[in-house]
Every structure is written in structure tokens, then in C-alpha cells.
Length: 439
Image 1 (cartoon, helix red, strand yellow):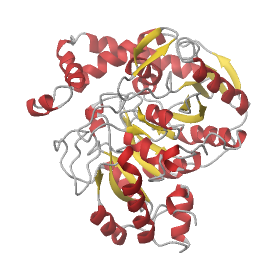
Image 2: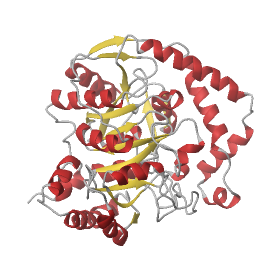
Image 3: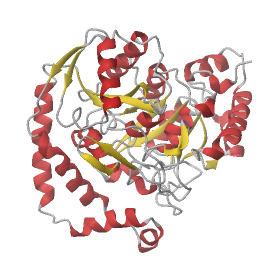
Image 4: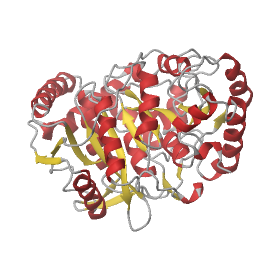
């Protein structure tokens, strides 16, 4: 008999709607699976056993009625303050905008998805709840900062999770864990009760197992339909340097093969002012991060504390310079999207590194993985455009590889068209790959 959480998110919603399983039975099965599988990966450290039961009687009969999901610790809930991966109530308990939209669709929030502390990291190694491990190999990183969201979905604990993306935080862990992760257009969802409201980079994200599930959950979050169209015949801009040239060979090969398999027209592009984008992103981000209270600062890990304190040394004169670069890059992107439908390059430059030593070896040398991860991901955050990571295979160590697509502002529907086209072109062999923990 098929376990309810082995069904897709769409199938779960349909099964509840048609009476094949009750919402309460779905919830009970999900909570049991969470207890059975999460010890090794620590994806969902806070579980709402009784509160999730109470939500069923209050949930509206929306398109996702009774479907269990997790919510990243960056969002306030009516019964729990947002802690952002710390032990402190940093945003008071409230119905955050993103939660309200998903609640209206009928979802049941079963717990808090683990995350890298304060959202400052792409590994998931540091969190008040402990590190997040990868379902493909618990000795490896799940990614960050939304590592709990990606790990929980990959392990078939939940069918979807509400994440966020301030510098690749949805896309990078989705690549590491072999699931679909989409970053929304900046400002597309109400930001009240969300840590992203304090930055000009952050946007909510959705993690799901495939493009169809991501479309259903994203439409609920955006509260607008995302009509499906053909994803064939697209023009894809390929920016070789540095996004393709400085990645592990297996990652490069898998992403190239996936583009060829999709049959899209690949067009080599150069985007003006792109060489300045990384510095502009980091300079502006550090300035926006601010310094938390002395209690919070003293409680976080040394690497996180060092990054926060570095912000005090950043001159204010860099902020208007970063904004000028941002405007120039946005203009260049608008010109690029006149000639291509999407941009494409590997989501992460390497597959998930070890938890003990999260470094990677690239053609440019051996470096902490955060540095090239941010390089691969931050353009979408600097400019506000949406992006998605698609699973496109495994490396020799059986760790997932992700391909990233970036689209024009507001193009979430077309991005998901591309995801679903890739799934059809590959006979779903990438998206159906299952980690050992879920077999």
C-alpha cells in the first residue's frame, strides 16, 4: 500500500478531496513518518502535533485542503514567533502574509523547517536546532539557509515547504537535495511577519518534489493562477564566465546534457556590468543585515558573528555605489530578456560537501562552499528576478546536481513550464530519483 507521503502534493490534495483518505489520516501518517525519518537529517525540529490536528477543523476547503507542509523559521505563525534559526523570538507570533496565503489554500502546517542561523549561510551547518543533514548522505550538508525545507521534501516527509531566498537560500539546498526549489519575484507576496521585509534581496520560496507540485504550492502562495503552457522551443541564455567555467566537471556535464535533452536553443550571452554584481550584492547585504541584540549576537556561531560584525566595518559610501550597480545590471538583464526567455547555469558549483568540512574543489581552487554558492545564486536576489533549481542527475558519489533557470520579473509560470518540460524530456528520471533515506 502506498504511503500517503509517497504521493505527490497534487495526489495528496486529490485523495483528500475525493475522500480516498481523510485529512486527519493524512496528517497522522505524515507525523508518524516524520518521527521515523527525521532523526538522521533534522529537517523539522519543531513539530506541532496537537496544533496541526486543530488546524484541520479550521482549514478552508481550498485547493490544498488538508495537505501537510512545513514552514521555515523566518515566518511568524499565529501561535509561534519566528526565530530565524536562533533560540530567540525575533518576530512576534502573528499570521504572516505568506502564512495567510497558504492558510487560505487549506494547508496544514505540521512544523518548523530547520534553517541556517539568521539565514546567513548556504550550508545548514549552523542552527540553534543543530545542523541539517542531507537525505542522500547524512554526512553531507543539506544546504542553506532553507536546508530543512529541502531535506524534508527530499526525504518524503512532506510534499512541500515554505522557504525563503535571500542569496540562493531556496535554490541551493534544493540543488543539494535533488528537489525543485523556486524563488519568487521580489515583493510578490506580503512581507509582514517575514524576516525578508528587512532587506531588499529576500523573497519567499517554495520547495517541492516536481514542477507540478511547485506550481500548485506557488500559485497558492501568490494567490493567482499560474496557467500551464508548453515549455518547448525556449531560448536560453548561457553565461559561461564564471557560472559554467568554474564548477565541478560532473556538474558542468550534467547541466549541459540537461539543456541538450530539453532541446532548447542555447545562446551564449554576456551581461554588461555582471562582474560588479557580486561585490554590489555583498556590500548591500552586509549593510542591510544590521546587528541583532547583544544576547542574540553572543549566542550564534563564530562564523555568523564575524559576518555580522563585519557589517560595522562597511562604509556607508558603498551602499549608493551598490545601488548604481544594481540599476545597471537590471538594465542589462532587461536587454538580455529581449533576446532570450531564460538564463541558465548550474545552481551550485558543486554537489553537497561534508558537514564536517564544507569546502569544495573547483577549477579555480579549494574554497569554502559559501563563496561560489553565493556567486552562482546572488544575481536573482540583487535584481529581484525569480529563479528555479531543477534536479538533473547525480554525481559519482550519488549526490544530486541542480540546473538553475532565471526568468524575467513575474515569470514564475513560465519557469515552471520549463521545469515540467525538462521532466517530460527526461522521462522524469531526474525528478523521480529517491534518496536512500526515502527508499
